[in-house]
Image (cartoon, rainbow, N blue to C red; front, side, top):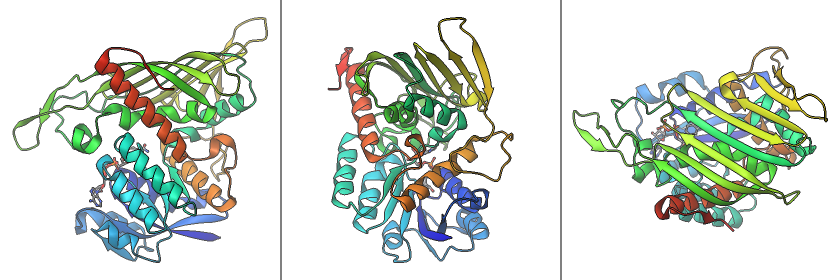
Length: 383
Ligand SMILES: NC(=O)c1ccc[n+]([C@@H]2O[C@H](COP(=O)([O-])OP(=O)(O)OC[C@H]3O[C@@H](n4cnc5c(N)ncnc54)[C@H](O)[C@@H]3O)[C@@H](O)[C@H]2O)c1
């Protein structure tokens, strides 16, 4: 089997998820290429915070606190960069300048200006393979919805609703961290964190927002600083975006809503999609990650049916087809999508390729317009 030698920059929550996916590659018997992690970088190096990586990944040959050192390592062919949003532009552009293939994290730049700079660097380095992480495309039910979209099975689209609902900031006693500061997380707040995930399927479908009316809420306005005091918490906790979208295949225009909420009581990490069409409707939420609700209308009864999905995955797994699927399986499938496309020059199917840089630009335009809409209290056009 071929290997692609990776460096990880940012060894936090998502860096560990990639390391775990790479260690589970034996689940994917039909892949011809696998990731090998040879270098890691995080801001502070201690036995405690890199021990897990060193103990579990014997192929690591470089550990550094300086991303430039990792990028200077000729042994590293590709990088996964999962760092706070204010570092995306500098780190992604430096990786491309160093000729590394890149899996970046969302939102792919803290704001439009940073995204423009990254996109300019992507254009300047066409030999670098560049994608952005978003695993929700890879849930079996979402793959099924993707195939239905490709086949035109929904008929004329009536309405699309997507969202990502968290409870992670419900507790006002939770100390502030970089994700709750405008400096490190960005003006977008919850939109920059959660919004890219909810855009992944609609944008791949070719459903392009034409305008947006946004309601943004900062519900908990100060938080403990972790040192006994309180500090302002100025990021948007929740966002509701009401849009019109155009189906770029049919030209039809329909209502499109996106909800990204960090304070959503009763939720944990629930990503959902609802597509209502004249011939079929589908609903899926990671709250019931193995069930797809579907209604097919042929002029007679309207019957919602529930389909148990199991392991209906794009990249064949050794896991039995009836076994339930989870978020870490989606992350493994996403990485398989990255490596498959790297190796074959094209995605396995339309919906089994990772998010492309152009899709990140579209969400930056949407979130920037949403900020403007909230500020002005008006509907803002994207075209
Ligand atoms: N795909 C997903 O589901 C998902 C989920 C959460 C976060 N994310 C994204 O992943 C990225 C990182 O988020 P996270 O939750 O892993 O954050 P985290 O705080 O857990 O980890 C961030 C890491 O960046 C490192 N870092 C910070 N400054 C650095 C520097 N100057 N040099 C080297 N390393 C540095 C830190 O040491 C830390 O290890 C963000 O872009 C975030 O939006 C994606």
